[in-house]
Length: 499
Image 1 (cartoon, rainbow, N blue to C red):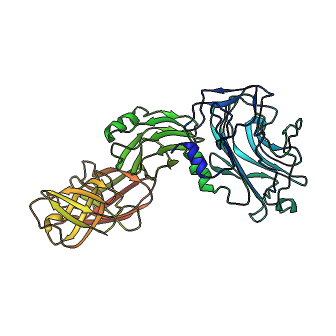
Image 2: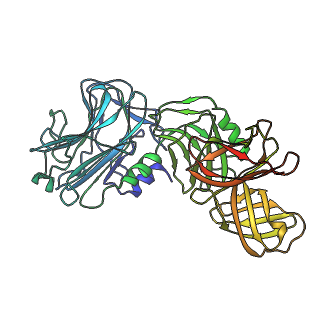
Image 3: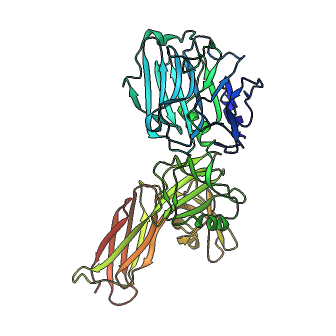
């Protein structure tokens, strides 16, 4: 769906694409542009141009024939994409309806701080953002006015995030004049031209670019927070980098080209398309640093599940899905278990450490599964397992013992995975069969340690045991338990000799 269609689906009263034509998308051509040009600098999806106002006096008046604001206004919203190429002074209006008596406006103040303002004969309410508009950075701006019956409140959003600074601090003044927006003299924001109730005026900062502005009004639902963030901003954000569709291996190679880089402040840093076949996939971000002001770090446009792993210091934390898919965001943390002699505290080499997921975390713990076999491949049906290829599971409870054990799996779907089974046990497997995620199943090294990188999504409880019974000196089993945190885990287990 084109971005303009996304906006149309939200039923605006008016929409102006500003894509090489001054055209309200309902089909009526409005006004003229004085001193404005269209340039090949699109600000949002599905645009090839944007409108540029490149001089102090530039003004675009629209529409000249279609009514916008000559009825009582109890609700009002407007939104659009904007970019400036300079720090502007004095304050300028990015968008304005009305004069100094009754108006709605976006104002770019000193230092490019955006101000959202509603003026009435009896009051002025301003909301200001905590982010300054950086030159050459695209932004989505939105303001919602809620009058009588809707909270008497002004709300403002930058890239779909609500801005909370306000003057006065009470954004719900409950003035009687908020009960209905009367017919105001909606004219030139600078007061030089009055055009009645039919004009919207862009009196832009120097070198201001515009794309896809729209206006909603009336006593019907205006815009929800979700629509402002997901539909208007996330679906319109242009990516700095796109990882194109291909095999998982090819997409990982493309993503690796940006390893050890710092991504700039942007509406959207990296877009990841669906892989070949639009199936579940896992990708690693290797030492990629994301600017703290970027609005979306990674966007996924597939319909399946993307497991995205921060490795080697990558700090992706803001994700977006726009086509029904899901992102599971993991950060690799180090998990180390050390086996030591309880008497002399010496390191114990070749002890077997087994760490299993316990209840209370994201990993599966004793979850019911079913198993069928074809040749040597056992296929497990495990609803919403959340595992990835290469993970380990502990299968117990099958009457056919060949199915039971610890296995490395290959994920084939959100509800299925496979492993290799020996022999030819009956199929389907019978019994009360459960699956539990395996975090560690390995032997300690010369330092008595077993270490793994764990894909952290939330605190993960675990239980397990360590023993050495395969070669002298023998040790009794030692039980381990605890919780893996975002800082990782490093524990020591003391083993008692088994004489």
